[in-house]
Figure 1 (cartoon, rainbow over the protein chains, first blue to last red):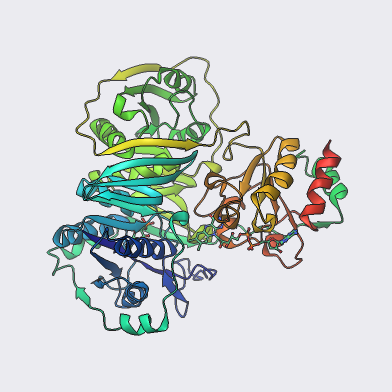
Figure 2: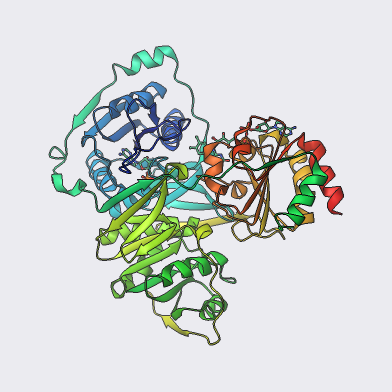
Length: 254
Length: 310
Ligand SMILES: Cc1cc2nc3c(=O)[nH]c(=O)nc-3n(C[C@H](O)[C@H](O)[C@H](O)COP(=O)(O)OP(=O)(O)OC[C@H]3O[C@@H](n4cnc5c(N)ncnc54)[C@H](O)[C@@H]3O)c2cc1C
Ligand SMILES: Nc1ncnc2c1ncn2[C@@H]1O[C@H](COP(=O)(O)O)[C@@H](O)[C@H]1O
C-alpha cells in the first residue's frame, strides 16, 4: 500500500517570530524556514513502515508556494520516494482547503494510509488530519505515538490523550496524525541529499486537480496580529527560605 | 445565537474543562450541553447543575462509550442544524472531533479561542503564543475550541436544567477501542490545579524526578508537569507535558525546576499568575519571565523547600 505524507513549510522552530509593525502578521522575510517538526516525524514513520515491508511507496505532498519544493526535498533526502507540489502561491492556506486538496490526491493516488502532523507550528490549528478523515470518511488515529500496521486492512494506533494513552484499531485506509513521541527522525546523509535532488517532484495546480481556484480563499478574515503581553522579569531570591517567605507573604500563593 | 457545548467526561465525572468552556460559550448566547457516552446519566446531572445551561442533551450509546471522534461527530451532526455555534474545550477529545464537524459543515474551525469579542470575532494564539490573531468568521455556523486556561469556571446554578435523552442511531464503526492506559493518580489535574510543580531535563532520570519533584508537589497539593525533554526521556508520562503541543495551564503558582524555558514550553505556562524558576544557569531564558528566580542546584533547593514546608 502507498503512504501519503503531508509536509508543510513553516518557520523554523528555533526562531522567535517577529511581528510586522502594522499588525498584518508575522514577518517571514529572510527567516529560516524548515519542515514542520510533526511532518518530519510523519515522513520518518512512513519510511520506517516502508522499511518494515508494510508500505510500498512514500509519496510526499506540500501545498504552498514554489519554495515548498525545498520542504519536499528534505523528506526525499530522508528516504521518501517522490513528491507532489501543489502550487497555490504565497498566501497562507487554511486547514479546510488543505484537507480538500489532500482528499483529492489521496483518492487519485489510491493510498492506503495518510500521515500528517498533529499541528503546524505556525497556525497551531490542529485540524487538517481530522478534517481530511471526515471528508474521506476514513477512520482517524490522531496524536499517534505508535502506528502498527497489522494487515492490509487493519492498523493499531496508540494515541497520546489528556489522561494518558489510548489504543485504537482502525480499518484501512485511515488517516493518522503524529505526536512527538512517535519516533525520532533520522538525519539525511550527504549522499542521500544528493540523491534526493534527482527524485521526481511533480508540480500541479488546482486546475490540474480539477479544483476551482476560489476554494482556497480564506474563510477567516485575520483582522490583526499582535504580540502577547510581555511578562517582566521579577526578583532574584537568595535561597529556598527567602523563596518560601516571598511566596507566602508577598505573592500570597502559599 | 444558540450554542451547543460538547462535554468532556469519563462517563462518571464531568471535566472542569467543560465548566470553563461553558463560560466562553455563554458569551455567545443560550447554551445546550451535549453529553455523549455510555451509562453516563450521572454526568448529565452534574452538567445540569451548572449555571447558564439551557438544556442537557444526553446521548447514550455503546459505541459512544470511549467518545471516539467518528461516532461523536455523527451524533453531533445529527443535531447541529439547530445551532449557530458548536463549542468544546480544546481537550484531546474536543480537538479530535470538532474539525470533523467543521469539515462536514464546510466551515473553518477556530482553534484555541482565548477571547470572544463578538458573535463572529475571536482572538486566538498562533506561533506558540507569540502572535495573537483577531479573526472574523462569516461562516453560518461557528465551530470553536476553547483554550480553557483563559476562562473562569462556571459556578453551580440554584436550579437544575432539564435533561433530554436523545435517540441516536449510528452507522457501522470502523474504529474500535482496544485499551486505555490512564494514569489515575490522586493528584489534582494539571488543567484545574492551583499549583503546578514542573520538572525538566535536568532531573536526569525517572527516579530523580520522582524523588525530587513529587515530595514538593505533595507538600503543596500541586499537580505535576514536565517539559518535553523530560517526557521524551521517560522521566514523566506524556500527559504531564506542558507547552505549545502539550497542556496549556494557568495556575496561581507554577514552579519550573531545571527547565530552560524554550518558547514551546513558555507557550504552555506563561499565563500562570506567579512563576518561580529554579535553575543553576543564570542565563536560562525561563528567568526572563519568572517572578521569582532561584539560581541554585535543584537537587539541593528542592529537598530544602520540602523540608521548610514540613
Ligand atoms: C514541534 C515541537 C514541539 C515542542 N513542544 C514542546 C512542549 O509542548 N513543551 C515543552 O516543554 N517543550 C516542547 N518542545 C521542546 C522545546 O523546544 C525544548 O527542547 C524543551 O522544552 C527543553 O526541555 P528542558 O527545558 O527540560 O531541557 P533543557 O533545555 O535541556 O534545559 C534544562 C535546564 O536545566 C538546567 N539545569 C541543569 N542541571 C541543573 C541543576 N542541577 N539544577 C538546576 N537547573 C539545572 C539547565 O541550566 C537548563 O536550563 C517542542 C519542540 C518542538 C520542536
Ligand atoms: N500547506 C500545507 N502543505 C502540506 N501539509 C499541510 C499544509 N497545511 C497543513 N498541512 C498538514 O496538516 C498538519 C496539521 O496542520 P494544521 O491543521 O494547520 O495544524 C501539518 O502538520 C501538515 O502535515
